[in-house]
Image 1 (cartoon, rainbow, N blue to C red):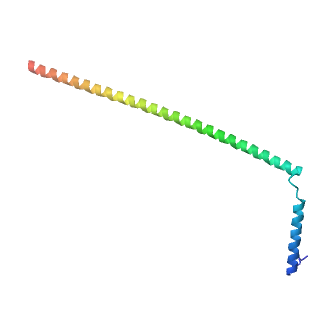
Image 2 (image 1 turned 135 degrees about the vertical axis):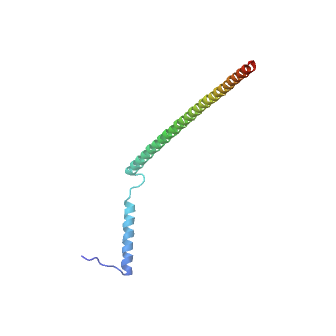
Length: 124
C-alpha cells in the first residue's frame, strides 16, 4: 500500500499540531520527581556513583603506594650503585697504590743491582 503524500500547508500544519499534542501527552504521562520509582532509580544511581568514587579512590591510593614503592626501590638501587661504584673506585685506588709501590720497589731493586755492579767494578 502506498503512503499518501500530504504536501499542502494545512496538512503539514495539522501534522505538526498532532506531533505537539503527542509530545505534550508524553510529558504529562512522565513520572513526577516524588514518584517512588523515580526516587528508587535516583538512589540507585547515587549508590553506583558512590561505589565508583570509592573504586577510583582505591585505585588512586594503590597507584600512590606503587609510586612510593618504586621511588624507594629506585633510591635503594641508586644507593647500591653508588656503593658499588665507590667500592670499585677504592679497589682501583688500592691497586694503583700497590702498583706504584711495586714500581718504587722495582726501581729500588734495580738501583741496588746497579750500585752492586758499580761497587764490583770499583773493587776490581
